[in-house]
Length: 286
Image 1 (tube, rainbow, N blue to C red):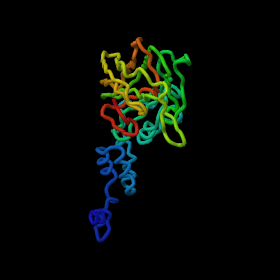
Image 2: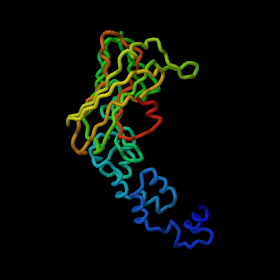
Image 3: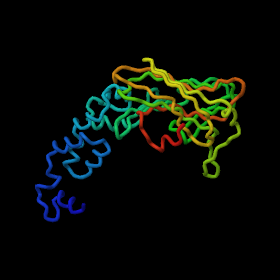
Image 4: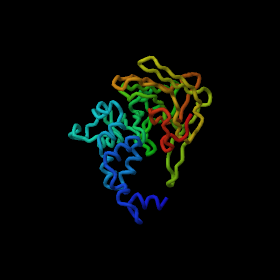
């Protein structure tokens, strides 16, 4: 292996004509079209030819979502967006872009370019959220939004969200990120308080998803993993046309009023391309 790289770099007597540095930039770019973005960035570190090829517009055009112009329309922190190279557009879309200031944001995942979305608890409709006897917003570093909605006790538990957006064509999975118990720190160590936990073992929570084009999903799950953030899979939906908005309505509820329930943190809802995995995000799943 070492000898091979010595030859292609023109070392140890290898012919200069065989060096990768002499490969035509257009040929290098044609190879990169078939690689994923992280591999392109790795190759760009090798030499000047690959670095130049990695900046070619047609390489990144193939990686961008079909409706990238629509997605870039939400970018408000950049000037001269029309002069961006395709590589710069891809890099910008990989960073979170806010939909409404602070409570909803989207980005594309770096390897495949699929759109991801995070919707904070403050962007959801939570029954009883304005009554401090039931709910409160608490700060925490365990949420990307730096706060969560914490339920002390309530009879009717229901959280509803809605998004109207032009997703690139594909299949998407929607999740609620929930935590039974209130996370905290003591002497620098993570703990959770279980003072208000009750009622979740009597009936399962009901997760539901509907779309404007008639798709539906329904699942049920007991919230029985205290002390752990869980990504509860609500369901999947399919987007067929990138330039047509789809309205997705989703909810989680436990509305059996024969008992109260409490001790639950609601971080928010998340949408990812189906099959997307990242352990630091997902952790335990239902």
